Each structure stands twice: as structure tokens, then as C-alpha cells.
Length: 208
Image (cartoon, rainbow, N blue to C red; front, side, top):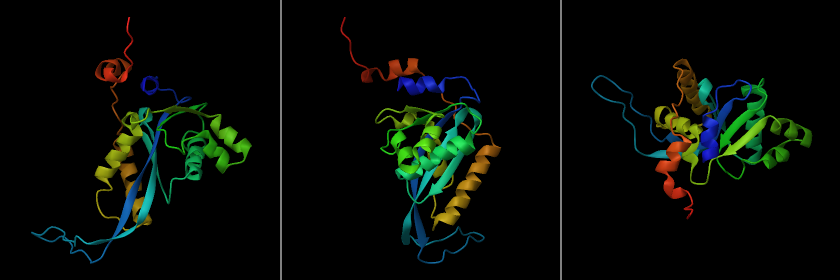
């Protein structure tokens, strides 16, 4: 925990950007009856019945100090998908960085081995040489600022029925542009000193 908190208090340095990485899912649902559009004096009306239409995965890369985020909509979140996101992070998101500091949780795919599973050894090594991983503790994913971004995305964009992946991608892209235009970021204030007071029960008790 303290490791992640100290990372968050590093000064802004384009050569060593700090990014938070996380993923979530969105169930896609189709209408079984055509909704009745909103009209004067009447809200939009739709049937409570719906048809499940699969699930899409959402990967988010969030750079809080630069107020930048990138959300990728994928079919799944396997080790290969994770490796592809790390390659994107290195080659597209921050190609000029000397080292990218990545805060993420301990999901079983969040491992260097995933890159060796996806790419030839030389390519996997090239990508990993530009990454510095820091992991949130078990049951401590709230320390990942990308999870906050996903929560905002869910409330502002995904809290309605979306039938399939193309409109989901459009909605996510529009949300991204809106967040970027307003320069939204996370004002993180929780420090190591706060943790030692407020989460004292999590620290071992050392007897004199």
C-alpha cells in the first residue's frame, strides 16, 4: 500500500509518467420491444424486459497528472489482451517516455509472463524494459485511480441499455472526449501518513 501511495506523490515527469491500469466489463442488452420516444409531458417509455447480448471488456489507462485516459473496448481480458494493452501503452500512449510507471491490481494476467505468452521473447523484453510495475495490495484495489475513472464512466456513460459493441465504443469515445475537454482528473490526497493513522489496524503490532 505504501509503495503505491509513494508513487502517487512523485513529481510530474514526462520521462517517467505514472499511469493507472484497470479493467471492467459491460453487459450488453437488447430491447425486446421498441421504446416509445419522449414527447411533450411524457418521458421516454420502455419495457422492463430485455435480451442479454454478451459482455464486452473495458481496459482503461489513466494518467492522472496529465489528465489523460484511454479506454479500449475488447471481447475479453485474457493474458494476450493484457499484453496488447501494455504494447499500446509503450508504443502509442507514452512512446517518448524512458520508463512508464504502471499501477495495477494483482489480477492473474497482470504479469510479465503474459507478454512472453503473447510476443516473441525479444519483443516482450523490449516492452517490459520500459515498464515499472507497482501493485495494489489484495482487497486494496481502491488505491488504483483507474478504478475511480471506471466508476465515473459507469455512472456517466454506461448506466443504460447498450445493445452491442459498436454503440458501446461510440459512447466510450464520446465520454473520453468530454473528460479530456474539461481536463478532468483525480485530486488524490490520501498519503502514507494518513494510512498509518486511519488504517493502523492493518499494520503489525510491534511490542517494545
